[in-house]
Each structure stands twice: as C-alpha cells, then as structure tokens.
Length: 235
Image 1: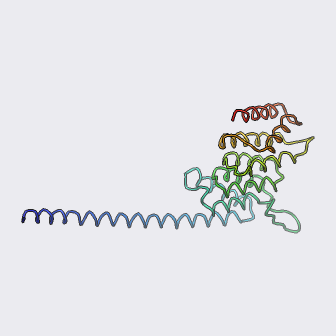
Image 2: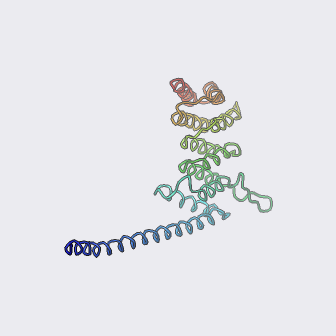
Image 3: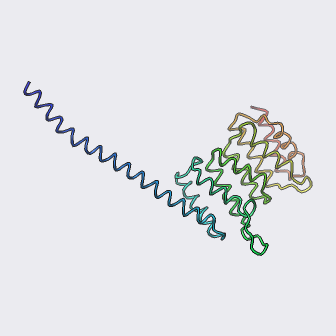
C-alpha cells in the first residue's frame, strides 16, 4: 500500500510541471493569436487609409499589400473589412467620384481592374456582389473583363444571379462595335461557372452565347462561343 501511494505521489509530482508547461503554452498561443489579430487590424487600418487617399500611387500601394496578403494565404472572402476596401477601390472614379473645379480627379481604371482581380481571388458572396455591381456600373472594358473573369473564378451562381448579370452586360453592348476582349472574358466566366455548377440552365446565358457566336466579333471569339455552347450540351 505504501509503495502504491509512493508511486501515485511520484506520478503527481511529474504531472504537475507538465500541466504547468501545457497551461503556459496555451497562454502563449492565446497571446500570440491576440497579437497577430492586433497587427492584422493595424495592417488593415493602414491599407484602408491608403485606399481612401486621392492619389493613384497610394491606392496602388494598398492593392499591392492586399495582393501580398492573398498570395500568402492571410486573406479570404470572409474578411469583410478587406472586401469593403476592395469594393471601394473597384469603384474609384466610377461609382466613387472625387472632383476639383468640376474635374474628375480619381479616375484610375488600373486601380479598379486590380481591385476586381483581387475580389475574384478572395471569393465569397460579398466579393461576388461587388463584381456584379461592377458589371452594371463600369464603362471601361478592361475593368469589365476582369470583373467577369473574377465572377467565373468565384463560381457562385445561385438563382442564376451571376449568369444573368453577365448576359445583361453582353446583350447591352453595341452590336456594331462590341468589345472582343470583354466578350472572351465573359465566355471564360460562363465556362468556369458551368464547371462549378454542373452546367448552366439560364436562358439569358444561351442568348448571350448565341449573340457572341453570330455577332460582329472576331473569329477567335466566335469559335470560343461555339465551344462553350457545345460544352453546355454535355452536362
């Protein structure tokens, strides 16, 4: 009995420092996590300030920081503050206009394009909504193309919301002089959305595809439209 008690006592003496070390490690982990969150909050604050600055260079610096966060896995579509910053940048000079003496001073298409690219990489419902808004408000073809491609990358299409927005933008183009690059980006988006959703059952998308196939587009774009239509028939 004495030996048994002695064994238990020895074990207890061994376990106490182990429990203490484990508890300390957990505390350190918690402190590290809080510190990381604090640093991320500061980082987002800096990025937000750069994004709202009127200069093109500051906005590009903000985008470069966001792109670095995405590339290093430190950002996702769940980061609402980050999506909000990108949404703001994607409207710089279009939906968000600043003027001096009546002149627009923040029209930066490259900023809007890169913001759309990052939204597509982030993914999620909020990013999707921002890119759909771009399709309905943007005039610059290269920004529209990036928004369309981003929607394809995200792949979400509940209630055909995305395919309808893409179709609306194509069907609303100038029939005599449509933009080939934008049409090709829309075709890629349709293709990606079909892959993510086991096909597309949106009649407006079919109309848009037929418009591109038979419209005033270059042969490369027309052939791509036919290819996408043929793929849709296989789902």
